[in-house]
Image 1 (cartoon, rainbow, N blue to C red):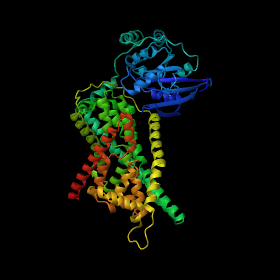
Image 2 (image 1 turned 180 degrees about the vertical axis):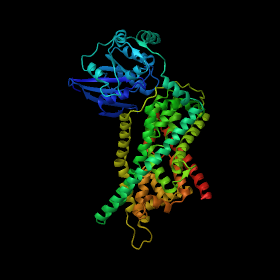
Image 3 (image 1 turned 90 degrees about the vertical axis):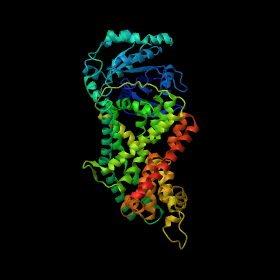
Image 4 (image 1 turned 120 degrees about the vertical axis):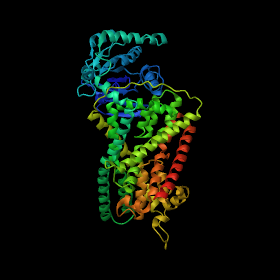
Length: 613
């Protein structure tokens, strides 16, 4: 690293606006990885100050105290102290504090100051503080703390100018290091009270609008009803908004495939492009709008400050089934992908609750399942109205998400019954103020999710699609063979072998074959079915949905939907469970119970649906 590069660590409590400040400083030019040996996110970015000096910003995990109770808090402390292997100590610490909630945040500022390293305090959300009538005597606060104090508004352009000017100058003098002992830490609360009394004037403890909204949002009855209605309307909107765009993309790839079939000469390349690329990969890409619409609503709820309140509301219910209110946020993250959800369990301090959350997180309906759900629902569920208002297809999609949630709660209840320690742990969490979601933050979140999907599409899904095309095409049928050529391919033989295992669920050999690549990436099941039916010629007229309705019964489609709701079809998730728990036993437990549940639920669904269809 150049001598002109200043290494800065960005720290603070959760919900202080630290990530927004990081994005403002780095302009989104960042790289994300994990710390060596642990799945704790390490976010790093750079920017060049007006003087030409390069600033390297390390965004450390949010923490309330150096009394580390979780892996991410321990890493934050070790990095700041210079004790983390392979991670140099920062030249400067920027401690971010929420100006509307200094009583909570100042205690951590005092802990950081005791390290004896150069520190700058960034008073963030100053616009919100002024709006609430909160006045802060910044010069007096700076004098009493003995460190520079700078006002920032991380969500506004130019809101970090004063902070950049301060860190671009000479390093502030490091405060004296103080011993870390229980007696001195106990005095921190008294010191915070003195600082607040001398420098901060607050007309009321919480904002009036927050209190008014929380009277309804946190009500034990109306709050739960509101949460249920919000989630139901989200899934209605996902199908109503995303499906037309998915159809448009799907029709576009069908048009491209038809023109490619005319232009390309007959042969293996023709079949690969038409049946493999446009038929398989194009079908999966068509479901990107559905995924982005779902993420849009999740980001809106997250940015508004509603999600922590949902966790608070559900704490009693989750404790009754062996989980904790802190499980809500990781489990909600699992609706995007189980991997960050499992990693998010690091905030759960109790090892028992953390393991229970890890084991049930894969049951949440992740975005990789959405292409399968959208395909089967669109093909087999009529687009009729329920009660003259709700879309039946959206109702079925909502029911699948509910099935995953109910399954997770059931598994949590079983874990609670079989474990020895049946004690319960109180939920303590901060409820941030309500705020309007920022267009920039939501757009950035959607861009990141879309980029992840496209990388998977052009990486593992493309490779598996080409592989499935190859084994569906070769070897060629023997001379005089009767029946479709695909029956004599590697795919045909493998699929018919697996059909012996899955035929009780109503799965034909094509579905049984699609379950194999789906273990690497669930979306590949759609690409596999599209490729197999394109190679066989069934999907050429009317597309994949038409081919499915001609080869599946409604009972089979419902059985397959239930299978994907519960099946352990993601090897990346199992790898993260192994890394987070350091136990192959937990991996085996997760895979085994999900396979048994999925098989049993699909079997029951197929048999019952067969009686009525």
